[in-house]
Amino acid sequence: MLSVSNDDLGNKPDFGDRVDIKGRFNANLGNIFKLDPKMDLYPGLDLGLRNFGAHLGFRYFFTEGFGFFTEAGIPIASYKTNPIGFDKLNNQFTFNIGASFNL
Image 1 (tube, rainbow, N blue to C red):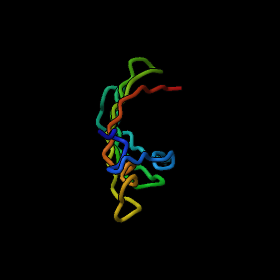
Image 2 (cartoon, rainbow, N blue to C red):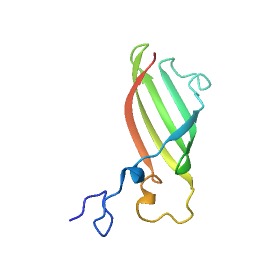
Image 3 (tube, rainbow, N blue to C red):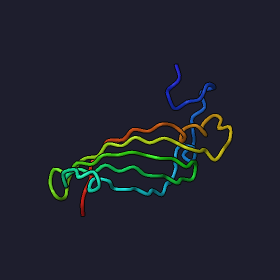
Image 4 (tube, helix red, strand yellow):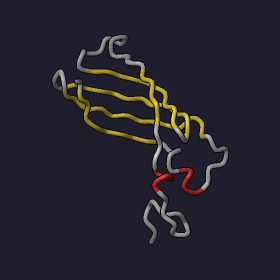
């Protein structure tokens, strides 16, 4: 049985196949929708080394400096027209949950 990160031939992706660096732009809409000041809804765009994508996220701050976020992202355009093998690793739907800190 192959692990999820192996291809059909049992090859494992190199570090360079797994990594992507992205710049992000968010539009914080919490004030526009008149949400509680502890909440924020933010759509945004990602520009990375492997693709161009979009995300939609939600943040909630329990205190002024600590909260959580959840976010979903999709690739809009891959830089390779026919990604094969490990090129597909960074061109998938993503779902993230994490902590937010307001420094």
